[in-house]
Length: 134
Image 1 (cartoon, rainbow, N blue to C red):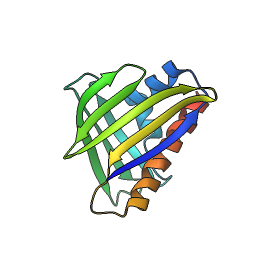
Image 2: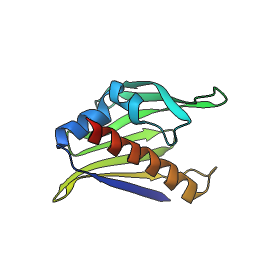
Image 3: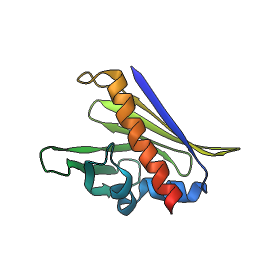
Image 4: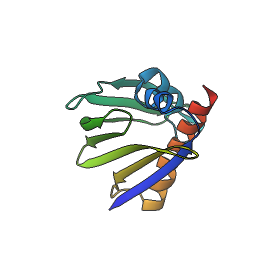
């Protein structure tokens, strides 16, 4: 099953792309709630290159790594990647009200679909706020 989340950001496409692909930016926006944070991020933005980030609860009680491999990159248009046996497509779609950033990913089997959608949407909303603050 595929899940899609999206947001519209009134900012230049170049700024949005840079914020999405730069580790220094990723650690600032990559969280679903204020009690979590991303402690590190690595990006090798090329087909066959890898990405990884470490998300942790601020109280140190939990944490996990999110990592994968880029399978398709069209600069300023889309990024496709694999993480485990799942895939993610991120599209950057210029529109009249700004750039739509749309993520479509394979659902996992551990957590309910709505919980997954809400978590990914919360991270995407943080991304939009981060870009707007630049």
